[in-house]
Image 1: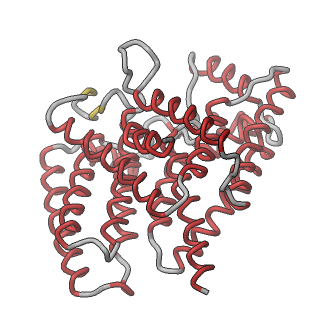
Image 2: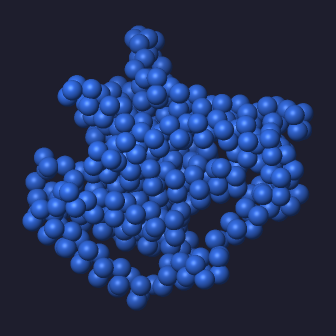
Amino acid sequence: MSKHVLYIYAFLINFDVYSIIPGLPLSYGKATLFIFVIFFLIEKNLNAKFSIDRFQLLILLGMSGANLAMLFSGILATDTVQLNFRLFQNIFLVFLIIETISSSRELDKLMLYFIFGSIFQSLLVLMGYGIGGDELRLLIFNDNPNTTALRFSLASALLLYSISKSTITKLKKLFFVTLVLLLGYMIIQTASRSGVITYLAVIIIFLFRPQEWNRSSILTIFLFLSVSSYAIYRLIIEDASIILRMSNSIEKGDLAGREDIWGWLMGLIKERPIFGIGIEGYHTQSVLHYGKYISPHNAVLELLVKGGIVSLLFFSFSLVKVLKNIIKSWLKKNPFTASLTIILIVIISTAQFLTMKIGWFVLSIILIQLKHEKYSISHTK
């Protein structure tokens, strides 16, 4: 039963901030996640066997160590005991997904439900539902435009993975290409620079694999590039907001205020580089400097300022182990995990990775996929 609830959650994670009842902090995604946890605990109580392997466990332990280091830093710096519960919730979410999804077929189904959620959300927006924001940036179902764009980029990567499979028909491939273009259109509407860059990087990773080119793939690449080039050209003519934001990033170094935040963070890091100033210490400094809590918009700097080098070392241990295995996968001509890594790195470097569920959802898929690749290789020897 927990698998089916998890599939529904993968669909509803696209609406994770959209409240069931206006004014209450309970979204459809959060409600479904709560139900999933209940079913998981009931089933595990009946069957106490765990399927997480040593590699996956080390990754989660490294992430947990980074969080505990921030707790220890807070005790040293401000004499307060404060834990990042949202980070531990996300680590626990990864564990639950790993334990629930046990086969490649189940992983494909999980990804398919997520794609359905992104496409359904896109269709609702095209029909005029859930639209907000201003004339420069589209706000979809009250969610952050960058988060929305990164979700659409993830859905595009999952669709391209489906296209790359030789088992689906040419008609399905053409249909999936159309959906990828639709998601690209939605990303441009959000005017998210990180979303556009991630989307294009994912497409490049999947399309340009010369060792797999044949007549059919060359024709697909030609049609895709032709249609997407025309679509982007039309969008630029009709709405230049994304081009304006991109040009400001390149010419003026404008990163929507991130460069100022990062400069201020570097000053705090220099004061206590080893252990950091703790979670409560950062909150206090943020209120003193900006008048409110400001997100660091970069997981590395957030770990350094809150937990110092100690916290970053735990996090780096996990990240490096993941990247090493992804590089091995890439060298074996598998672009899927590499495309997901692009999304993960963008979230880590420009967003609130430690508290963003979509980033941990991506990490879950990567860890499960790497495990399945390792299993399939060992059985073919």
